[in-house]
Amino acid sequence: MTRILGIDPGSRITGYGVIESLPQGNRYIASGSIRIKADSFPLRLKQIFDGVAEVIALYQPQQMAIEQVFMHKNADSALKLGQARGAAICATLNSDLPVYEYAARQIKQALVGKGSAEKAQVQHMVKILLNIQGEMQVDAGDALGICLCHSHHRETAMRLQKGRV
Image (tube, rainbow, N blue to C red; front, side):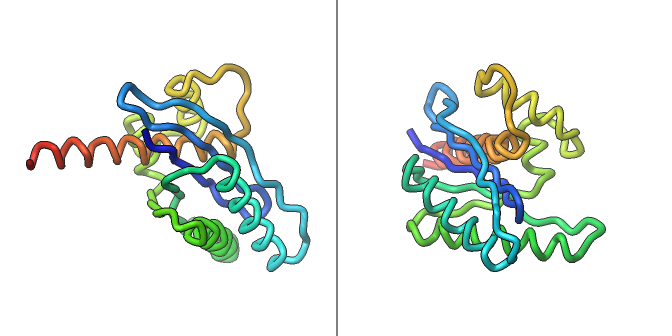
């Protein structure tokens, strides 16, 4: 069993999800969001760092997966997102956990089967794969999707290792 923390970074809301990757499948543990209240950007980064550290202390994951930053239209937003990612990664490394990074297309491909999937399709698959009933916060759902992507990649790598021995 491996407990995985997924982080969907944001400078205002950072989503998190925690699953257990078991031989018989994945099990939902928790999800939620770290809501950033500070107006000052440096204080927002501190709140992300502290919030991720708190989630790690509470759920004791063994690995962390996070989405890579992609450049869309707004360079300023991409820079802020990159800094939010950095705060989350530093909090994780401060707890001596390994960090795995995935592109948005990889996450969508792992969950839906196509890298250009819509956000609603990803959310739907997360709910099905983890047997989650009812509404789910978008940021938490994205973080759970990152967890599931890492779990799938991890399982594939383990199978490939066994084939070489």
